[in-house]
Length: 290
Image (cartoon, rainbow, N blue to C red; front, side, top):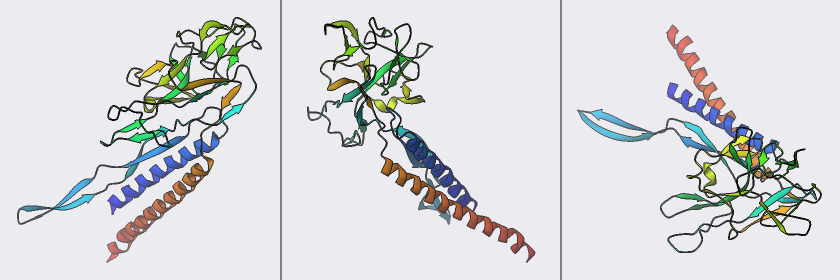
């Protein structure tokens, strides 16, 4: 009976986390560059049940001991591009591919940007990000291209981080904001349309599942080499769109369904705990009198 209490309590904690995740997604429906979060649940390790009879152990089966929300995964699919008309607003339009060593072609990612190989390996579609830097010199990654310009001419993200160029140094504008022109490859142009030698640092993250969400629309990685991070090349199917921003990729219908499902499942586990509580109360108060 006590085991049932623990299992139901674990279910309540898991559903609370699912509910919080759905609430977070709904709250960021209109956040520029926001990436939807999905809560991943797993069962606790199964226990092998056996019976001993006459010195012989006979396996009965496996018993599940509960469930827990193991991690939160970000969904990196591109959001809709919205025209803003501001010269300091940028959005990334990318459809990056990975070569499949087995076939020699490209890996066929599904609509969620994921592919499961014949061996069960999960491969995620590479993603492009603007590269920014905080005051401590840490490199961060964001899809929020709503930039601003500081009085010193530095290009800053909406969170106040310095936007880095392809050379790894902060981007500093030489002219006015109104004259800022950027081509599809991220090159800053002068008044004549010629490149200035400065290019926005668009990073390609080959393994986006290694990104860690920091808040303020930015991510970091603990090991850039393991995540396969590099600057974008001309061969990449990626474009920088000036005067646009990327909207949130949250599916409002799906997260509403998830919210209600988590609430109902939480209630069901709560009723199980109430049942066990009433049974224990009877066992202590009523059976004890007999």
